[in-house]
Image (cartoon, rainbow, N blue to C red):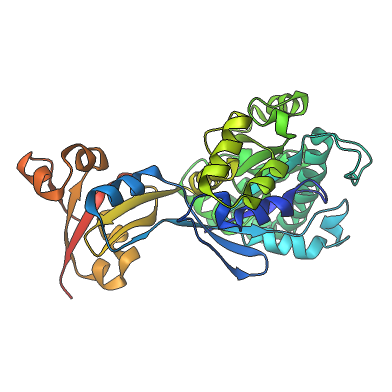
Length: 364
């Protein structure tokens, strides 16, 4: 599961990616490893794993991760191949969610590609290019499905009805994500279309340092514009985040943050938001060898969660032993949770909750 950072040139997109790529931007145990020039595997900040480490005192700790992709800057005409348009659209199609960076600061030394700062126009520039590309793909699909629908093919008629609704939405300069599938068949079709504007999105308003806590007039404009999109808006001073990464010690970074009125780096807030946007959640395994956060889809069952550790765990699943995170922390150990009756045994139908501390029994 990958979240792609998109934006016009010179909005702070690559600087943000570079901040995420520097472990010092987080804390001492937040490694970041680049597996391709523009893809990073970033640890998800989670205070719960630090608490588990404190209680269990394991030999090692492994945090949950999220893949962040730095995607080539977009320009007008990208849907027709202008600039790096084809590369941009290809990369973004491979992502599962979009982190849209908008420039919300004034600085005469940083040239804006369109001459002046206007996040509303910038957002519309990217939206239109993505919508045009989706419209092109929808119309191609409609050409094929129309013939089958005319013959009375029920599946084709279902697909045509959904494509018609999406096409109408795109023609109104709106994104496909606002088209709500009416049943399971439409949900499956929607996922199969792989439309760019159907992907979930969050907006990052890149502001000056003085606006990092409460935003500014540009942020207010963005919030008003996206209020009906069911999308999160994050305020981030990318320049200040870059300065934080240059500081050597954790203490120095904390002093810098306090001076700005922040309790943690904005990058940490962004990473957690991206994790949530990808509909991911965490369960833990906690033993003396290792305390580890495991990433699963929201709604995953116990066998599916076990399969993240090893496919054999899912195939031979017998049961899951589960302690709620709050109970583990309250009582301090697995043994004390058992004594207090907070140790549960769950079967194949159990839907894992975020923060569950789990152990699996299996037989292969």
